[in-house]
Length: 468
Image (cartoon, rainbow, N blue to C red; front, side):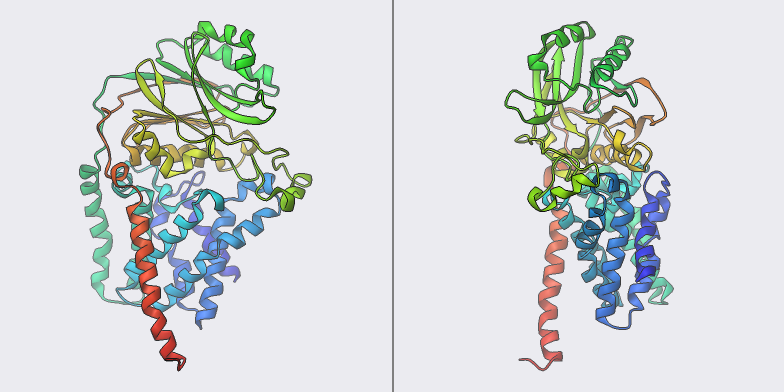
């Protein structure tokens, strides 16, 4: 079981900060070999479960300050789908494995990506954020298609090692040939006028007044930007009830700031607030809250975690859905921190007419972990999926920007303070990627495949046990 846990943790090295993206193409091989060598289906089930738990423990290790020992429970519960994957890895020995194992992996990722289950952090395909060419697959089928391709190549490598039909070595070549096709067919592109965005990163600043002043000071030095973006929680006061703060921001032009404040009703929300010359022109309230960080699921049962960790002492109030803001004629969709991990929110932005996606983030709680660069890397994946430029302003880093193909334009790491201005060329409103048009076709097809195989296997199990 220990070896299965370690094998599950290995693929996480493909993500930042280790950032060994190439490793993702072979990192599943040790785990698959362990699963295929299991002496029985029950042993394969246990090994698969441990593999999934090891993957999630490594991928979510940065959440330990917020959920403490709850991380072990999260890994154990949401590693369960890989138990069935382990059984499939043992049972599928031939060409069938090339379809079943990638489909099973995508189904496991899709199930755990539901917000009620915590959300889609560390989807395997996101490890390819540095490769716009590979991300072309995301423009066609979302991050799910990239995950499918990665698991497919890993499976082919295992079959090759087992001296299966040598034609299996053609699988990586076929994947490589599909990439330029996806690039051509994906539908992303940049055709519009230039538009400049400035990202403000003051760093770790204690105190809401000091944090506001730092953003104000840095913004005063920005010139020529169509929009200036502050990070998450950059404003700790409800601006609708603070005219003096709006007056201070009025000379700074067009700003997208972020409130983390108690509103008039007495509850706390996080909001993106568009200000033009100090006047509020639009607002978006964060919809997908961070489990344990911004609310505690089933608080009566798990509220005790606040005594031994930095879990949310009070639940924040979620918004009601995606919003597109009109920034002097440019439709912009704001996402707040964790929300950039959700593929469907990027599609909702495109459906709403957005030509640019802006992410506001603050990972100061996890400043020394792998979380900040992993989070910034997600912007590249959302850009490739949607065919829209995506920029991220992080209060303490990493701030970043990517064009509509997922190519990096800026990367302002956690050790930097100041502003960075990027020039974007947002595509015309009618330009859409295949993924933006078709949605989650890939995981749904994988679900149908896995369900069909389960139905087909049921009579075989019945016959083997002597049942009619």
